[in-house]
Image (tube, rainbow, N blue to C red; front, side):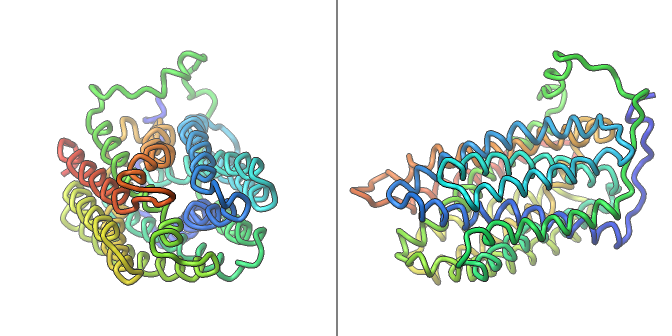
Length: 418
């Protein structure tokens, strides 16, 4: 019996599962993205103010490489897990524990320990994400995926807002700036662990796998799965634009709009709140609408163009108010994208039954790679026409807008999804 045959098709899901699933998803992203958005930049600026841009780029880049490897490998192992706890639960528990350990090292260590701790945190949280994202194709039928994906997209953004707010509340303590979001995430993941009716696999149903088979399993031939390949390219390009904004937003406020260090937590709270309201509107409306009309591609295409337009407005901003307008526009586009993205990807997986977590993990490389690529190429754009210590943030965000527009075009060749 194949793995695809042994699993029944997902049945319609109720509010109980959607509730605990969404809360856990919210918590994980709060713990993982709060450092990316604000606290890592602040911590690095405290320890290495002269070389903060370079140090942050190295730390985020190393973490992104770990994330890139951890997500698909953990996904494959999750798909082959035969524990009595199920296929996904052990990875939810273990990933959360490792993520907390990494955050603790970041919160308490020097510059080298911050880098090591961030890699450990990325390892743990990406192992967890490989399992939690697979719950969508595991548990949710196609007809409900747009709506559930939309709720998850909202939870991701609200998680960032909640994390930034916790940063403002705990600004006097480096420890709690990192650990408060982590402890909240652990409690919410525990609710999912208890409430999930996990899938179980038998050892007898697992196909044999040697070392070479393990390595080959991570290759998905674009000729055999062209829709998956185009979806990967689209997300990769979009995420480069998002990563540029997310990674350099704090430095943009410090160096371009001339905020003081002590103004950053409040400014980020305001910025993230505006972005979140726009994202929630875009996500909820588009997720419901997509399920209603049975279309996915047009929403991803439009979302990328809207997000790119928002980045262009940010590139031209000369005040915090103008920045917030661009922030709202990009947030709305991001919300439309996040609502549809997981539903579209679940529909083009090469095997959504046997290899859901592994294939979603491979697809998530399109999110992890930009976290490394964006900091690596950003200095090229920051240096355009810049003199002395100045940085050309306008060029950086215009480039991000162009990457997003290219991501919109990459969605057009997909044929399996309307």
